[in-house]
Amino acid sequence: MCASNARATTAIAPSTAPRMSTVRRGVTVTSPVPRATPSTRPGMGTILYDGGAAFRVWAPFAKGVSVTGSFNNWSHAANPLARETNGYWSADVPGAAIGAEYKFVIHRGELPPLWRRNPYASELVSSSGNAIIHDPDFDWTGDNFVMPPRNELVIYEMHVGTFNDAPGNGPGTFGEIIPMLPYLRDLGINAIEIMPVAEFSMDYSWGYNPSQPFSVETALGGPQGLYQFVKAAHAKGLAVLLDVVYNHFGPGDLDLWRFDGWTEPGHQGGIYFYDDERAQTPWGGTRPDYGRKEVRQFLRDNALFWLNKYRLDGLRFDSVVNIRNRNGQGGDPGGDLSDGWGLLQWINDEIGSSQPWKITIAEDLQNNEWITKNTGAGGAGFGSQWDASFVHPIRQSIITINDTDRDMYAVRDALTHGYNGDGLQRVIYTESHDEVANGHARVPEEIWPGKADSWFSLKRSTLGAALVFTAPGIPMIFQGQEFLESGWFQDTVPLDWSKLIIHSGIHTLYRDLIRMRRNWFNQTRGLRGQNVNVHHVNQTDKLIAFHRWENGGPGDDVVVVANFANRSYDNYTLGFPRAGRWRVRFNSDWQGYSTEFGNQAGYDPTTSDGAQDGMPFNANIGIGPYSVLILSQDNS
Image (cartoon, rainbow, N blue to C red; front, side, top):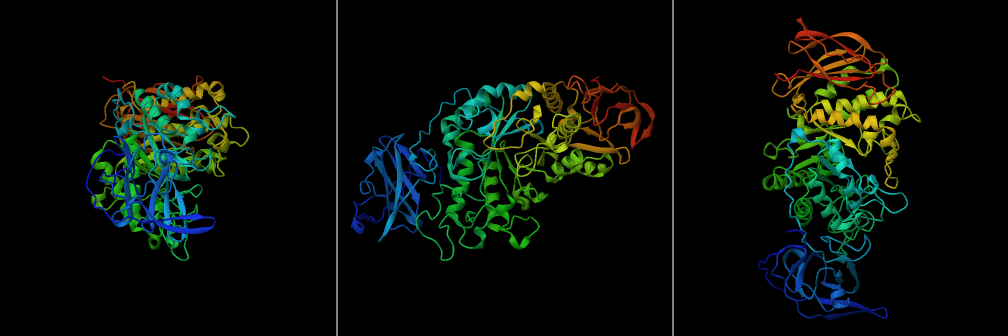
């Protein structure tokens, strides 16, 4: 099956017409309806053709289905659908045109009919309103975007409703982000990950309560807003990734719930949901039935829909562990959902075979390497996954109050952790929408509650940021992190853009780190590589150093030094992989980043003969408190 608004034809066998029920003065009357002929046009939802639209819906327990809308004066009887095989109903409806509002009417014999929105609807009046026949066409002229290589990706996670919203005017929209795209491009990021935008209940939400998985939230700008946003982002060289939610739906404004009236005794959800204890999730009993082929098709169609219709460049799957395990616990094999695992494999195979340059990212957070193994080996087939083994130890190492309590070996393990020998199979970060809400605060606020702009908060939060951009993996930051936003994330509170002026130096620090991560100046190519050797760990003095490289050599070999203590060093001896002079490309203690910083040390060292830390050469470096240095050699 295809997503809604497809344009094609094929043959489907006709069948007998249903009978229609209406309620007149409290009495249910059942009467025959005009005989309908199944549509020969493939697709689900609405399929436009010259002069009308075909409609198709899955309602296996319905006694009859009709479509009613502004094109037939909302008549129950004018446009019945014909029964096809496997519970599908369809018909061509002349006169149904783009912009018309409509609903399906599910007839249940002696029971009152149900009015339902099209599950495949691409556009709604609102989350509780009618479906709209959507215009599938958009002018993509000039959109020749090419996805950046995986080893150059830098992700900026964004909530559309709060990123550039004026307080008191409803949530922010796609259109309000477009003027800020040059800002994001100049910051150096090249991929925007937007939190879910499928239609949800009410206007304010994180987006993790989708009620209509194919429809773009009207309050954020609807389908046209998303079209225009993606095209504008592509024009600035920015990929757009979308967070999708398949571990549960709703629960608010959820027409999928008991869609055709059927429920299993003792359970509530109906045809789209498990009819036993597998339906239960941390967000209610609305886990889709991954074992039912029509539901699997629905979810597969949805993933491809976003990538194809809106030319999105990748998908991030929310809480994969709650798709592959009923208990949401990766270490609980008794709760495994093999159907969920198989669904993930199918979707990833479909994307990989048709558009392999697009990335799928899993939020599983169980450190399971099978999530990013290829499906041929039995893995789920994701391109990358959020790495819990980075964010938690690194975050802990910078928010811990006392220096003596910092664990440098935990930091080492976080730097070297990976999946299947491929550093790009992990996304690394210190802030995401989860880390800065749900009882957690932004990193600067966690470091010193109530004093997020203190010296300690500035120094240690930027220390963590430097590790994000120098460790192997795909780096990600959360909106506002680059100018020290300290308020915990709420879907009704816009970013405080005044902090960009207050902390303009911190913004510059992030910009410099991102440019070095992407090797803008051809001096730090090793940060794009996947090789890492943590060659120096000083648990007593809280200092760590690691070597990063792609192919090795001048301009490629990079040495990163991180000081996790509130003291500086004028002469600290470390091992280096190559002889000669090394230049400090980045010093997080530079006063240009903050007038509170000490601008200490950070001189260009020259190596001496003699092995140190398992390296063939050694040199003295200087480094400030809670600071990071990035060093490399000039290209010869």
